[in-house]
Length: 492
Image 1 (cartoon, rainbow, N blue to C red):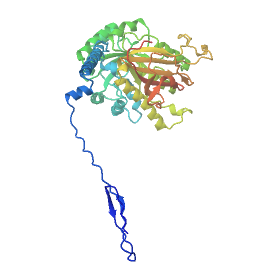
Image 2: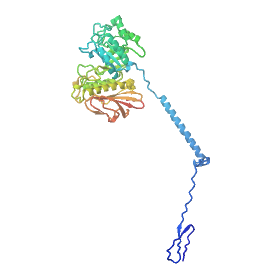
Image 3: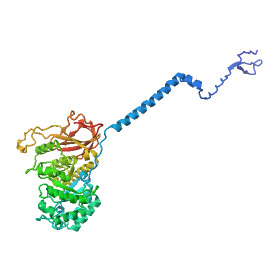
Image 4: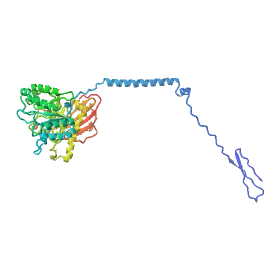
């Protein structure tokens, strides 16, 4: 008998049949859920907010007024700060770079053509100087001081070149090649047996010779303060001749080597010359000790430079390490450095047992130091016309007038000395250690200075990159040059 099972709506019936042996057919009905998917919501369409909706979302008209006022306040503050910054920049004192003449910017290089000669090259000294012009130009040399061109007769003939060193046409060629290389040439008369002042002024041959060399392009002449020509009457007459050939861009000069410093005659005539060459060290008849060098340098740095434009020489023969330190001082002091032939290198350095480097590497290191110093001096405004502030770390209690090394106490240690060349917000710090021990800087020293800087050069040519002054240590007889940046002026 068939049985039917009623199901809910939404269900279907499935019939199953038994075998034929059954009486009749058995139909079985089962209910199976019939899944009906829900309808998907329609995608929301984007539409911009209306003005009323924007006002409602932004908080209403009141919030719109507050927002407008905030924007207006921002722009007022921004414009006020911009105006204040411009006013500070305009009203703040700015250093005005003075106009420097060529002899105030040049590195002078004293050279004797006779040093290039031997028995087989008699008379070819001037030719050798011409061949060395590219090398001198690479060193940063700006002017040559030629010594020993004239024979020391009594009186000397300033129109004739000593035939043992060259000829007049060779000098003319040298002047032409120097002009092409951008090098000035100064003829040195120092130690010549010049005529008395009256004879020199009134001697037509001397005036003719001076005019001849000036017409050939000579930039000036060098004399000594011990020469008879170093008198007011002679300098006045010489000044008249020089001004006749001088132009605004090519001034002719008188260069005086000071052999008798601090004399009344020297002070009287320095206003009539352009360069007064002074020695970093006092004259001595013996090799200066490290202590004597330290006291002389400290005294020099602590003494006002005076009104006359100075030029500096090393002056005395020194051990090679001290010579390198003093080279750093000479090239960074205010004034024009005057270097003698061979001082950019030390030909005897290789004889020292403590030098552990081959000849080629040693020479490259020394030339690199000299070149870096000359090039930095030529382009750094602080080194060209910046002010000088002497900064003494350890001031020695010894009198600067002491000259006998036996009077120094055994515990004396040469001080670490420093000075600052400042121009605007840029400072160049020069620090030298003249002693034989490594020294670190006192953290409390010169607190007004920036705490960090960048190495420019050093005697060892082994310091590069940024440096903290608190971590700075100076090796034995080492000199370093550091560039510092600081807003405002420095007052030691």
